[in-house]
Length: 116
Image (cartoon, rainbow, N blue to C red; front, side, top):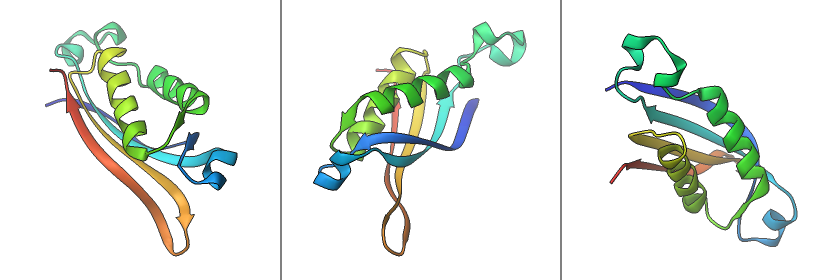
């Protein structure tokens, strides 16, 4: 099974339910595994795969423009974007808030989704 991976993608996002979380964006870190459409390795053409530069740009723009109460919803949003907009057959999305609790490096969620 072929996959593209993007690790430690850090960006600002509006996420959280507490007043302090609604007052300013927070740094989130994403780890993504994206199923590669069949044939990309044989054709050697960007048209047959998923352009990770476009994925990164789209995620950063989108997360800075929307608010999510829960990390679960943010992860679901990213997964749906990758499947529906980029044509990924399956995805694994791990998203974490960085440094939000004393003595804890990250807190987050991990989901896996595929086309129905």
